Amino acid sequence: MAYSDKVIDHYENPRNVGTLDKSKKTVGTGLVGAPECGDVMRLQIEVDETSGIITDAKFKTFGCGSAIASSSLATEWLKGKTVDQALSIDNMDIVEELSLPPVKIHCSVLAEDAIKAAINDYRTKNGMEALVFEESIVH
Amino acid sequence: MELKLPVYLDNSATTPVDPRVLETMIPYFTDNFGNAASRNHSFGWHAEEAVDYAREQVAALINAQSAKEIIFTSGATEAINLAIKGVADMYARKGNHIITCTTEHKAVLDTCKALERKGIVVTYLKVDESGMIDLAELRAAISEKTILVSIMAVNNEIGVMQPIVEIAQIAHQYGALFMTDATQAAGKVPIDVQGMGIDLLTCTAHKMYGPKGVGALYVRRKNPRVKVTAQMDGGGHERGMRSGTLNVPGIAGFGRAAELCRLDMASDAQRVTDLRDKLENALMQLPETYVNGHRLHRTPYISNISFKYVEGEGLMMGFNKNIAVSSGSACTSASLEPSYVLKALGLDDELAHSSIRFSLGRFTTEAQIDFAIAEVTKAVNRMRDLSPLWEMHLDGVDLKTIEWAAH
Image (tube, rainbow over all chains, first blue to last red; front, side, top):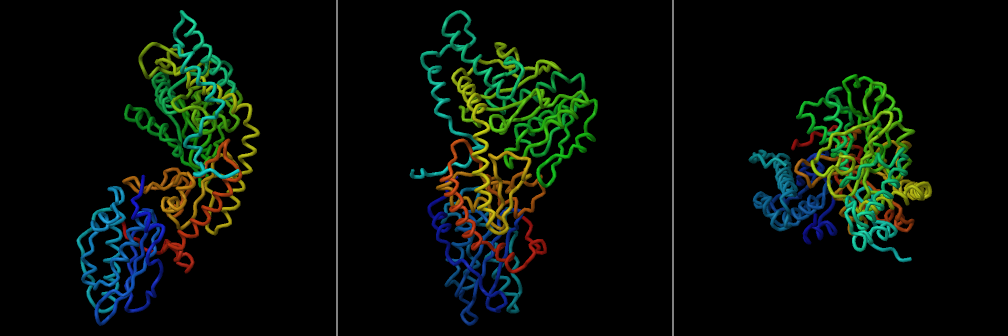
């Protein structure tokens, strides 16, 4: 199966690989997927408390090229957005941007789930209620 | 000599045709294009001569008593279907039980599944963590109702060799036939159907430097005389067991390929063993790296390695422009299931998803292996830097203690 040029670019030059200090109150961490399914994504955001703007985002992913590209792209999109704006990132935007084939749509779903999980982690750390999301598609 | 890219290390999928094989085949497309079944003119005689010679060569490769015991087919899948379904039909009066194992190729497993829908009872023997079946489990499963025991000689994913001599003996004690799928074994490791007690054997040309589209079924003619019911109706070719005009150029190539494999088997295997050992020893320098399958009872042509905490498909993407290998992971399939063979070995999921199959061949060179070692090492290190599981491992987190979100 051939990957799109954008997937290859993210795979070869992944953006924002790394680890933020998860013990910090300003950092939200989302760990989604499972080793048995062949993908695990960890996505972290650092939020400026006064403005609510995501100042940094990092990821690490165990998975195929599309999973790596989806999470790499997600970190690019997260930076500079407010937490509320970040919630509007939809997995289909990732599918479109990376031209993912149908068998790889689950990678984008996982990236969306990782964003939401990171935001909820940030919210609960800061005394806010976790948001309840609709069940995502089974991947 | 400059290294030509990409490097091919997927010889268990298929092998290139040996130039000597191609040379043998070419006249049977052009000057000697006759139908081997044409008995009345020289075109047919030439074709028949080529087929007879090839039949003798395939018979010699597996030490069959007679060339008449070789039935040519379109490949191993057809040979397997013919053998298993043909035995089930022919021996229906004796019994309705077949024994095979969970790590067989899909051609065997799915044929058995098809027979189950028709009332045949199939036992799938389990394998241990090294991929070997347990002879005690076979003894417990077999009965007077068992008509066939079918166990592969060499596993296509991990290269493990089952104890087929002992398996054949147990089968015969109960009056069952013993069949082996020797697709990965024939031409690569010594096979002796007489000495090993094999009643039916399947193989294909394209895994032994012959062309695609031609395979063979060995059907024993003496002690016992084995019969299979034809699965295709037609002109009654191949002693009535497999109708259809013979693929003369393909068969001529198969014969030449079998001859070369028989003559070069020992020297090829020694050279490939050295290269395999070099590859494995170098890659095992990487931490948390494991060879899957039994380390001794296996073919030198296949090395299945798990690089723990990196996903196989993602890893392969790092070098598949330059190296052709297979991954045990199947992320492209809807099920996202890793290889059923590795799962049958009881591998942890993060290991099963992390496996790469390197398969070597006659044309693999040391320069190619050196290149592969460097590229794969680089890619594994890069992917581990990207892997959250690797980071957790370094931090001493036991992945089994984490509650993963269920998919």
